[in-house]
Length: 80
Image (tube, rainbow, N blue to C red; front, side, top):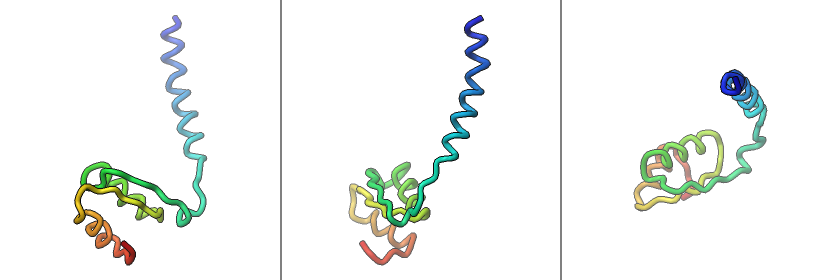
C-alpha cells in the first residue's frame, strides 16, 4: 500500500519540482562568469560552447593549448 502511494506521488513531485525549476531565471548573463574544466573534448567542450552562446564569460580549463583557439575561432571572440 505504501509503495503504491509512493509510486503515485513520485510523478507529481517530479512535475512540481520541474515547474518550480523552470521559474528560476538568471538575469544579465553578460555579467556572469563560469569556470569549466575539461574543455578539450566531450561534455566540457560542449558546455563551454553552450555557455558562450548564452552570453556567459567562460574560463575554459584545457589540457592542450590548441583547444582554446578552437573555441575562440568558433565564436569569433577577440580576447584570449
